[in-house]
Length: 248
Image (cartoon, rainbow, N blue to C red; front, side, top):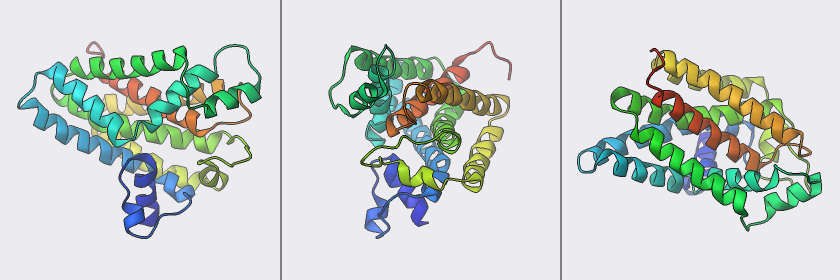
């Protein structure tokens, strides 16, 4: 349970690990529970959506859902996406890219990426109704966190003087840890039928593309890249469920 509480504290603003005396450096088992934390987040979003639907029109409710989504994760993953948008494109050396990733200031590309991510999530949710909407909300956080677990296992972490927050998790992350997270994501996806399984496949593909892109520009993946993977795979899942012409 300590690893699960650490995962919850690492990915959200909830600090159960500290209250239970289990706060410490995250480990590979912390990462293994990422998809379960994502699923819990998705269930919470579904509940909030049901409450908002009683009093607010769909576009307003969708906007507040995304605001709550960003808030409960401490904007951690969104910040990673924006930092990557500033650092990865263009002609720069690895040292310059790492410096930009650590810089708290945002550039034009980062601001644009953050605005695009929020707008896309709001519009995708606003255009999805009924059971499809609930499935999208429940699955997207889980798929995002399974996708980041996948790239953590398959791609090396960047060696930096301060180690980075992901160093302890990736150093000993093995197939058994990936298997635990994959089972959680697979069960959740299968429960949603064709689109759920398709969402998992698509999330994995998008995550691998992002990791390969970042890996060619950095000496290894970083926490910011992990955040970008989560945000992009969440958007991909929401888009899949909002694509009404796909058979299901």
